[in-house]
Image (cartoon, rainbow, N blue to C red; front, side, top):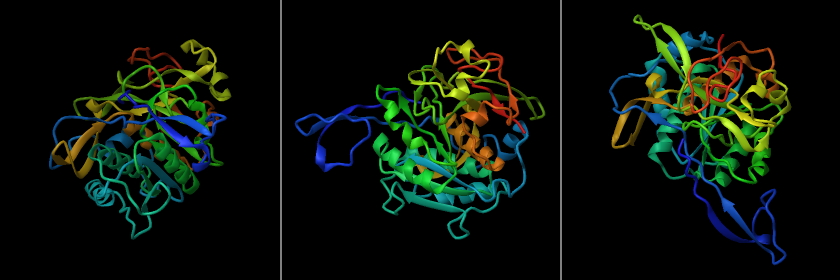
Length: 369
């Protein structure tokens, strides 16, 4: 993830805008706010091809012993929140589904829907990088939970204001929300934490792709922060090992307190975050060296077709989808409880080292089973 969010001072008349919680208003009636901008944690292996070269859904499912039924996730909706427009999102999902024998997920059959940040159809401009991000997110949410509905919510820009408006719409219309975006932490970020609180809704956020320190909204105590790993395979192509990915975002938050479920976890203290929020909570495959196959017909770097893509952009929608398969609320209490079987990742580092039980590279580890 790029850690270069721009900060733009904006002067607004206090009575002329919807008040942002936590923003100070001067006695003159004028307030100065700082906008923050997000990047997508997307890592693409060089070269596009006419057929898939990355990992397939069946390989990922076998590596983690995930459910294989075509109805997995049925009765749930997974929302994907991203910035800008992917005009070919639905048709590219169709190519992906056909390639890997997944059920069709279309507007016509009620599986797929796409809206702007307020639920309308005034889609933002197309951005090729975010279009590839969108393809990754929706295709791999569908790959892991093929029975779930997919709701794509497109923010009109990568500003936090617009992304959080999209977040609000998503959480009002889906029980599982995946966010493959973020930026550097900033003072006052906690005022945005309320956007990740909705009854019965599970929120997942990519932890970032540049190692330490922690990023936001991954550092919000209201989300499940999803880090990254590297998958290895033997000569026959069978899964052999999983290690922490060097790019996996993580670290101790500079501003947020750890949620009680995390601070009370037996191995939390050995990462030396004091009482601060530690990220990530969990992990899954994200290293582009063991990247997944993504189809994108919007030209990216002048090319279109099958890409091999990694980053915690991949691990977040897959965690959201596996949670949809389980059909339960996956929050901090669930993650730090005893309901998930983890593969503890004890090798690798991102500036911090993988440890037994919990660490700042992979959290508790990967969901298996």
